[in-house]
Image (tube, rainbow over all chains, first blue to last red; front, side):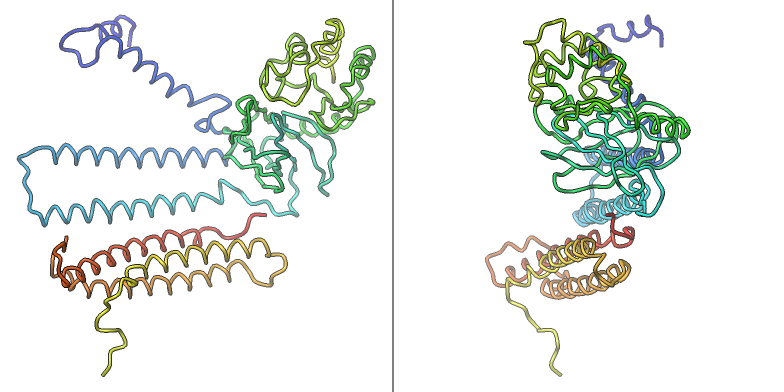
Length: 343
Length: 127
């Protein structure tokens, strides 16, 4: 539809059904509806078999709901016409069939369909099957990510970003350190709660390369909405090479590292191959490779790193990291530049 | 010959029979599967055995509900009168109770079937 015709339709006239102010609202609503149909954070744009089943379930429920709604509205319109007069017995039969029997059968069918889909949505990986295993722990308000070997031992740790091989299932062991969180990558599958004291399993497979956004789907505190992460699905060979490379780290900026260590950052953060071995905060090894900062909150620039180091609480309310605004600006910039280039 | 089923049930307890069976079935199914999945490694029973046992439990529960519904239907006079049975008489009170019990039995029957549907599709414990 051209702009002129659109404008013409939205012009207020006595015979039109919608007044002028309603047209932009209707267009905005329509835009909102379709804007969530694609992208790296949409259930409706699946990038894996588990997510495809979730999308299929959504469409079946959508069509089923639409058919029921149309039937209901049609019955309402029919009943509103006075010329249709029926006996009390007929009315009783309609109530019995349309109010009890048919809804019961429809609910039974939808429940059975949902149950039938469950094994595909939550694929089962036996303990002895060779798959990539990753342990993710939700903490206020970031994600601790540990890559495990076949024996279940930690190979190395990182944060807020997960890499998985395309076409191969990755088994996630999901934990929580403080309160209940929920691990959800809409493009790759359904959500799974992370409960303190429990380990919940989830298997996800990506069938095309890409970077997918994940979020915490259970309210966990002030910065719950700022607790995101990314899943990078890469070719298996590239993934293997990254795993091998990631086992060792060699920071080049000795001056930046010295400023980092002298100001006590290493008490909470670890950087492989250095004296920084803190476990309270996110592991910062190869931090420069990450696409975002502060669990998907900021773009990964030196300016934003400096801003976060100086006043983390202003960006993520409730964050446990103390502010370092008291440091000389020169030192903060040094730390930011060091982290930005950390490989 | 004396009938196995009492000829007349004049108790409010019959009203609760079907929902009680539904509640017991619901708790039984959830508790059995939860305990089995927590202890699966130490128990010498397969999950299929648990499903079959709960399937049998479901059939028994449905049978009790059907019996409850039959008694209610009989108390309602096999549908000979139309509700709402709101006269302040002994007869209307019995008919109302029969009708209400019949409806509750129908609801309980459907609820037990719904609670049992996962037994058909869930084939293992996820650990």
